[in-house]
Length: 321
Image 1 (cartoon, one colour):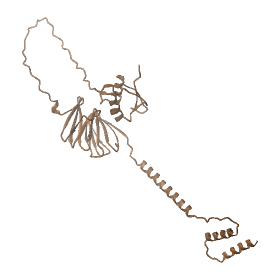
Image 2 (image 1 turned 45 degrees about the horizontal axis):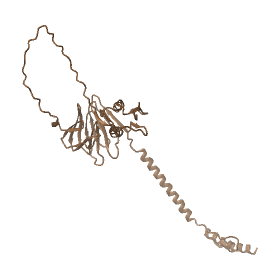
Image 3 (image 1 turned 180 degrees about the vertical axis):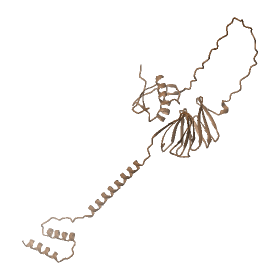
Image 4 (image 1 turned 90 degrees about the vertical axis):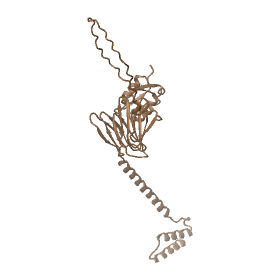
């Protein structure tokens, strides 16, 4: 009982304080209990660690909310990159691209492109006729796929058209590089005012196509009196066969450098499919996609079926017969 009385006496001394530190007084009280042997040594409570830890968690949570909110804002305000397709019949169409470039699409022509291009290049596919006015961007060249021809520019005005089997490239300002799609090393550079023609892998100027005038041979008219009973010969109409506009390519070049490169959204090749890539095929590379696939199938180089989306196709190797 003497020890308890001593503890109570110590506690009564605390009543004389009008203002006190609760933590300090609690520590003193525990020290008394410990000195009398009632308790083992109890460490004093340190709240600084708890406070700093709570602050850290709050800061991390705030930063996470800011990051998520920023990501949602960027996603909602990101422009949608859609596939654009323009076709004309009897009237021209003016097309303005997202980068500020323009195209005057001629009659009976077609242009295809993605509305916002991409970060590395600006690509357009053209068939028919078109006049381009390209906004200069050094980091993103402007590329126009025109049948077998690829036109690469940084900023210029040029026109593309067809005259029979000839592709006509007219450069109105600046400079432009023109090359074959499947053989890019075959190329020419046009400066302001230049005009080049392309046919069957060959670039030429209009003067190269002018042939020498035909040699006029002296004609000697011989009149032979025909029998009166001889019937007049009937005129026979001569029908010239249509010109073959197809060219010869390797199957691997057609698949990788033309179909998968330009129609990658429309073409799917079955997994582990193996094609005879060194096989030679003859086709018109300017024809529509389905026509090209039918031509390759008729030559026994591929098989294909229609995919899930409109205008989509699945390619497989030809079945062994």
